[in-house]
Length: 260
Image (tube, rainbow, N blue to C red; front, side):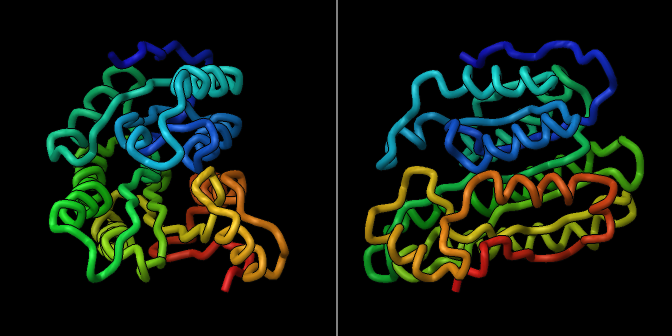
């Protein structure tokens, strides 16, 4: 059952809808906390069955903990359980976010399906699920955002998180590449609404999935000598969502510390 977490704002705050906020250590949660601190209300989606079948496992109490952290930053919140493999889900997510918190000003897509497999061992089922979640859901979310956008011209934002990793990770990388094209198309097709659309490639961010071997490789390939953090990505999202970030549009931005 979806927790009822909405609450009235004391002052008018724009609403950001962030997908894929399932774990406290995740990039989605970092973005939500940064935007909440910058004056945004937050609706976010989560899907625990995805985390439960991944190596890191589901995090009990994560949704409640994220809601508390956002509330402490002054945000009204709405946590929405959402299986984005279902094509009916994006419209339902927008319905619930609007009902509980009002019109969406920024759409930040950090959801994903990510299961390692290569050219020879990827199954048709896995391939289709990656494209359903990473690609089709992105299109449907952007479509709902464009159809429903009613807030001040020039304030609308669409941001997608991507990856260029395809070797040994074929369906993830390929579906993310398609996601890039869809998101960047919105910079042109939704220009009449004054909406900007950008894609961020954050590089490798250790949110609990890295092995020691992967960690060592990423450290060695990053000139700054550290791993990326969710906060690194969140700071760029925060800027793009601000009025000062309006002139950055239609871009695929690498925010990865120089990772090669």
